[in-house]
Image 1 (cartoon, rainbow, N blue to C red):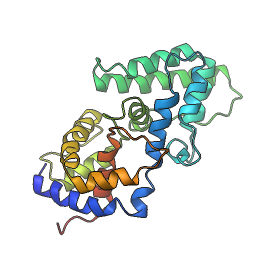
Image 2: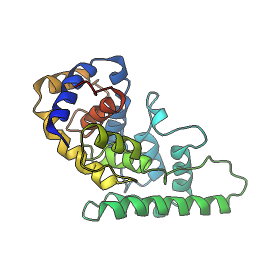
Image 3: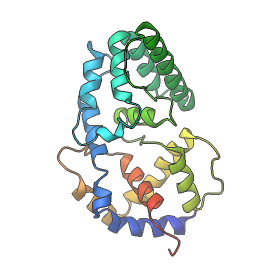
Length: 232
């Protein structure tokens, strides 16, 4: 990536942080705090732990969409086969294992479990889970478990960031590992900008996660995605 383009984007980010558009994303920090507070993969009642971790009146749009409801679907299979789901989360959160392998296996396991749940409950009308959709839900779980390292993923966002910030290559398909590396790489640029950090701290609410979070970099990515930086 080209440093002059990164620096120009950070200048724009300083002012963007103060906008209503930027502040509309804060519920994700609330999700992160809720997850840190409530989720425990070893909890006796895994479904209750998961439900509380994603319980918020302001962030439901992050896990409930048009024709599917990942949270409702996950709660259904957790109540049906909690040990299998528990093992899937254990594997996902095992940082000593290959990242691509973990996220791929998680999507596969949850899809298989949900299909089995549907077969066992043919009259059930639980919406589709969609955990195999572009790593979106998987990235939310990782974001909650390891706030300093992960943030919400989409392939379109990764491609746009690479294009606008001058990367030598733009991934033609999903690349969760590269995205995670970019979160780490761009963090150093943001952390050394005093105005960014001052305004970031001021923006966070009491209900939001306050410790080091890769969401800061994701926030920057969302600005880059939306803003016209061609003149910079």
